[in-house]
Length: 142
Image (cartoon, rainbow, N blue to C red; front, side, top):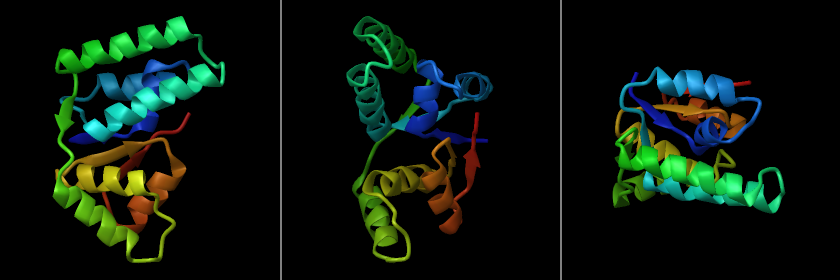
């Protein structure tokens, strides 16, 4: 499987959560998992939110971010570019007016599916929309 890893799975892999063990098992079994620049930004945002909500300490967040960056630098992930065609596809899906598809979710689906990747998520909403749009998707639950 050529996987596009959603931010929800990455956060569970790097941060202690009920899903962490399943995320780790899945990610370590993948050859060339893909993320995007959008995933990177969302990951930093999610870690920042955990610090603000006091679910992790700032020093631990720094270690999490450093590990993630080392994985990026070490080519642990293929980083897919976010292109104009992805925005156009996301826009087209949103303009169907049948789904409460959020902007960033539509972009993730467009990026991953355009590159022939299976979307791997632990986000029930993203999974639901991917299935409704007949996008190849794998749901990982705790």
